[in-house]
Image (cartoon, rainbow, N blue to C red; front, side, top):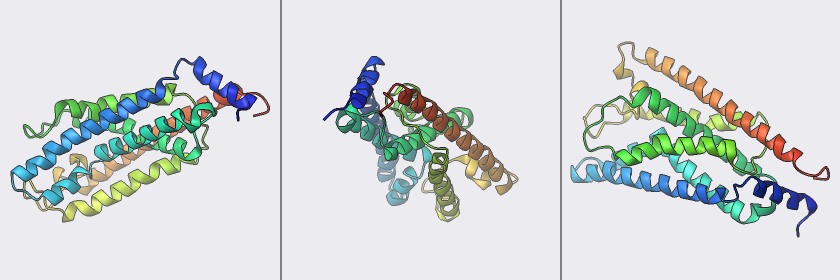
Length: 250
C-alpha cells in the first residue's frame, strides 16, 4: 500500500533520471568480483604452480586492504541494488544498516584509490604477478564509481556523525591484524621471516624501522578519518535534500 509520501519519494527518484542506477551498481559489483577472481587465479595459482605455501599465499591475498575493500564493496553494492529494485522502490531512503555499509565501503574504496595512486603505483612488481586490467579496476575504476555513487545515487540517507566511528572500526581491526601477523608470517616468495601487504607497513623497509611506519600510519589514519567525515557529510547534505522533497506529513 502506497502513501502520498512514498509516491512523492518515487517521483523524486524518477525525476533524477537515475532509476537505472541499481543496475549500474550490479554491473560494477560484477566487474569487481571478476577482477578479484582474475587476480586471485594468478596470485594463488602461481603458488600452486611453483609449489609454494598455498595456504599462506591465500591468506596473504585476502590480507590486502585493497582486496577486502573491493570484496566488501561488491557485496554492499549488490545489497543496495537488490534493495532498491525490490523493497526500496517506493521508499525515501536507504535503511540505516545499508546506509552505514555504503558509507564504510565508499570510504575504504576512496582511500584505496588515494593510497595506491599516491604511494604504490610506481613500485615495480615481479613480472607476471599482476593482472593489469584487474589492477586498474580494483584501484581506479572501483574507487571512482563509489565516489560517483556517493554524489549521485538516489535515496541517500542522512546519518549522524557517529557513523564516522563505525567507518573507522574496520581499518583499525585490519591494521592491528596486519601488524601482529606480519612479524610471524614467512614470506612464501622470498623466504623472509616476515610478510606485510604494503611496504609502508614493513619496518624492514626503513632505516628508522617502526618509527617511519608509525608516521605512515598516522598520515593514513588522518586521510581515512577525513574521507570518512567527508562521506558522512555528503550523505547528510543529500539526505536533507531528500527530506525536503517529501511532504510535511512524512
